[in-house]
Amino acid sequence: MGSLAAFLALLVFFAPLSFIYGRSVASRIAREASARGRSRFALGWPKLVWPVLVGAALIYRALGGRAEGATSGWATLDAALALIDFLGGAALVLFFVAVPFVLGRVFGVVAALAGYFGENAAPPLRDGNESGNGAGSSGPQPGKERFGMTARLTIAIDGPAAAGKGTLAKRLSERYALAHLDTGLLYRAVGRRAFAQGVDLDDGEAAGAVARALTPSALDDGSLRGREAGELASRVAAHPQVRAALDAFQRDFARRPGGAVLDGRDIGTVIAPDAEVKIFVTASAEVRARRRTEELSAKGRPVDYERILAEVRERDARDAGRTVAPLKPAPDAHLLDTSELDIEAAFQAACELIDRFLAGRNA
Ligand code: DC
Image (cartoon, rainbow, N blue to C red; front, side, top):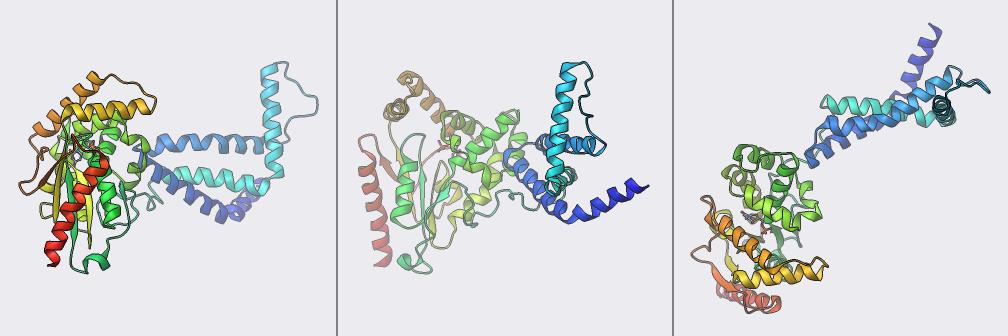
C-alpha cells in the first residue's frame, strides 16, 4: 500500500514535465510520419527502447539491485545484470531527469499512436501562397514596387528534361524579384515516396493518394534532383489523379500577388494559361544528353552518353505522349531553342522577351 502511494505521488510530481516532453515527442513522431510517409508505429516503437531499459534498470536498482559479489555462474547473465545495475545507478543519480524521460517518452509514443498532438504535422500541399513552405520555391517576395500593385508578372517556363529551364527559371526569378516554383520537384517527391511505400507506380489511384498526402517538408530532400527520382516522377506524372492533387497548389503559387516564375511541362497550357510571359525552352535530344553526360562526369560519375540519350528520348516520349497535360508549347509561348546557346545567352534572350513585354505594358 505504502509503495503504491509512493508510486502515485511520483507520478503526480513528475506529471507536468512528463506531459510537456511527451507532447513534443508525440508531435515529432506525427510530423516525421507524415513527412516520410511512414507509420507512427514504425517510428514510435524504437523510441521506447531506451525508456524501457532505463525504467527497468531503475526499478531493479530501487528493489535492491545486485548484491555485492553475487554471481549466477553465467558470464553473459552476470555481465547483463552488471550493466543494468550500472544503468540503474546512473538513473538514480539523475533521478529528476530519468523519471520524466521514461514517463514522457512512454506517454508521447502512446499519444502519437492514439492520434493526439499531431497538429504540428505539416499539412498537405494546398495553399501555394504559403510563404517559406519549402516547396521547391525560392526567391524574394514579388516586387510590387517594380511592377505596381496590380501589375502581375507570372512567367511560365516549360520544356523537356535537361533543356536548362530550371537554371533559367531560377535566374529569372532573381532578376525580376519573383518567387520560383520548380514543379518537377512535386512529381519527383510523389514518385520517390510512392516507390518507397511499395506503391504500384502504374496504379493511378494509389499514386494519387500519395500525392494528396504530400507535405511541403517532403520537397526538402536534396536527392530528389537525381536521375532516379526523375524517372519515377515521369511515371507517376502520367496519372490524372496525381496531377489533380498537385493542381491547386501550383495554380495558387502562379497567382501570387505580383506574380511568380514556375517551370515544368504544363505551366503555360494548364497551370497558368493566363501567365503574362510563356517560354518553351527546348534543345535537341542529343545536346541535352551531352549536357547531362558532362554534368554527371563532372560530378565524378562517369556515364555512357548513348544510355543517357536513350533515357532522354524515353522520358520525352512519356512526357509528350501521355493523354493528360502532355508536354507541349502553349500556342502563345515563345520558343527558346538552347541547342546552340549557353545558359548566359539563353538568360539574355529570355530577359529580352520579358523586358519587351514589360515595355509594351507600360507604354
Ligand atoms: O522537370 P523535372 O525533370 O524535374 O520533372 C520530372 C518529371 O516530372 C518529368 O519527367 C515530368 C514530370 N513533370 C510533369 O509532368 N509536369 C510538370 N509540371 C513538371 C514535371
